[in-house]
Image (cartoon, rainbow over all chains, first blue to last red; front, top):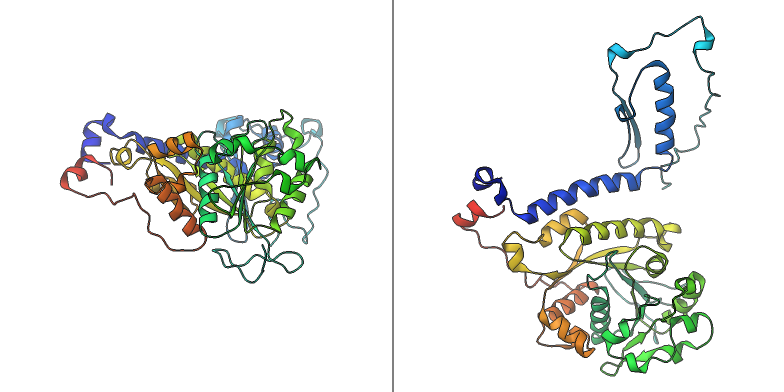
Length: 117
Length: 291
């Protein structure tokens, strides 16, 4: 930022504002465009599971899919407030919901969002 | 295309199914309307024809025919694209030969309100027939991301993204680039991806210098696709459309010369970017202007 931009913020020219706004909106749109289709459903399921044990809000669980040359990385971030951790009841099975059927991972198959080649 | 033989371009040589050469399908697309797609399609097609390439320019904007007016052949339209797709007319009955250049043909669209009339298999059949007779097939896409626009870009080998240095146009261009990478025939069949090029139109160096308009570097950085050309905002563009003359036929027009440079780059020539003199730096600009 130039000296005069600091002194008079309204001097920041409109082309710079346009570029900054575009960069932000396009970063967001590209991320959602490239994301695998199951992501919203996965986010909802994860939220259900985590919230059985810990009180969390919708916006404190974030999922990202990062891509580099030959690997995809599924990143899940959950912000937890320590004071809101629910006690886990080891005896009372009724307190815990029925477990979901186990997920089988086949080593041969690629993750669905990895493009072949 | 008569003789065959190798045809060199920026992207190497295109070979057809039976070993013969195939014409290159170029789409001019933008997402946003009013950025200069039809003007650019007419200019690029005429520019290719001026270089001796047999070229046909097709209007894909079903219901809103306008390429005929820009090309100055609106009174010679008898049959159209939909007639040929439906088998109501032969290709050579619908193609209009340009009166200024023997290599140039115009393929007008229909004024029907039935947008779905542009069936994909029908379009493919017509394009395959055109490929036998032309070096380049230039497709003028309608605005938007609906059926017509998707059909126009589906068969493309390369795409020219017509963009204005303005936020909504740049955003829509980004969207179209994404669609080309996922919804085109090349994407669906895992072929070499569609080659995309940026054509920045209605550019005003004066306004860029004043910091009122996104610069060519800004748009290149945001879209990160190779730059084919920059067309300066010019009064001669309206004059050309008033008279139905592709702007490249106007020797005096800066926009026309910029289009000819873009065509030269498209076929693989090196041309310096004109109308983009580097900004002179001074203490004054350093203090007030941009980096």
